[in-house]
Length: 77
Length: 77
Image (cartoon, rainbow over all chains, first blue to last red; front, side, top):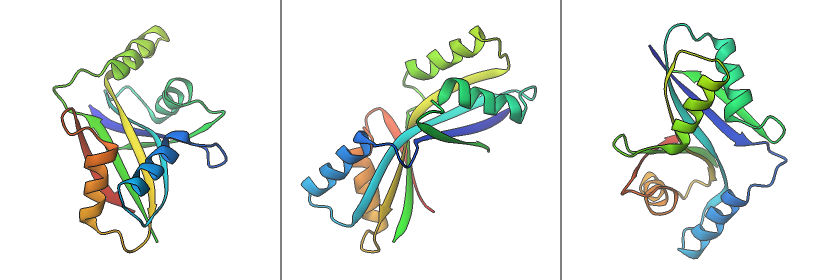
């Protein structure tokens, strides 16, 4: 059994309205010094030993991320 | 200037319908061996050096997470 983390982020050239909303909220509550916020998704998977890295990347690219607009990283913990 | 990652996850005792939907989709496309999927949020912040750890935890707890139902981690990269 292994734990795997997949982080999915909008590609740098893609607008991120959720992150921008957080940025504006920070200004509103008086916190300066945060230059940029980008928001993505964080998945934690518990997988058995039959799941190899190729399958993990297939899961990430087919189900967890939209490869047109998102990048992702797969990390075994 | 520093990069900071904040990961926000539903607390273990909170149902996670998004993660459960991913689990079901995995079964449907024929991938066995994934025992559990939980979905949260992943934030990447670019902050200047005036932002200390206390401010980061305030940002996470006040704006990025809902402390009633979510846990979070703050990591400086």
